[in-house]
Length: 266
Image (cartoon, rainbow, N blue to C red; front, side, top):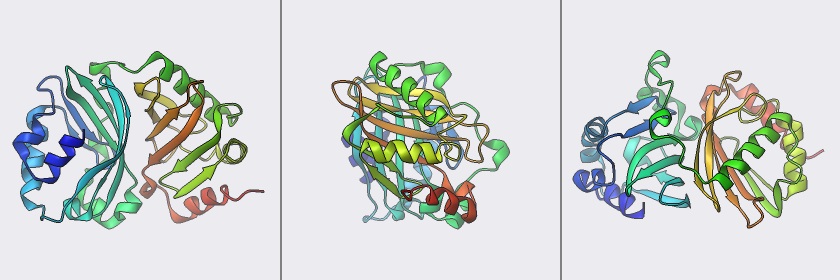
């Protein structure tokens, strides 16, 4: 992964494409609705953008969680690439050392709503599946159990016992960080009916190893219908770090302000 981002930053199209499988291969930007269901489709998009990137442009990973079968990658694209900064969480599946499925999730408000709207496809053209039905589930059974347990807990607003004593919870769309299980549990109890990954959320796809990874989620009952959660586990399968992101540009200022009020301890 570090080599891929190095080659992407150096604007080497041919080297960058060497990390992707020829078939099957799915690349999706879930925020913009960009869907490239083939190797050639991805190559055509990168061929359009890479030559325009200046020498100052950077794309780099900040955290990698998983194994050779599937993983979560948190990465940053500097504004020179697409017109605004992207801080994404990505779900990846591999086969024989090559990427077969890549899905980006990031917050459009942080990027800039006007800039994002120039790139986003019409709503009717957004893909309904991202290739997960083709590549299948390659995540660790240990992680899958932890993900099922977490999603169920978030749906009912009770995460008691799931987090380590020094756990950190981060919501990148809300710019929120909460430390410690008591504070995290209390926050989830206050907010789960308003969080897009809370009540009504279902699991789209899980990736990662026994040490961690994450899951993509869907919530058809919310204005924000999808997102992703990155998870790191200790040796007892408790969560030491949970990081989520979703597209905050789909909510108005009033709704976001109400959600932020939930972060205030009472």
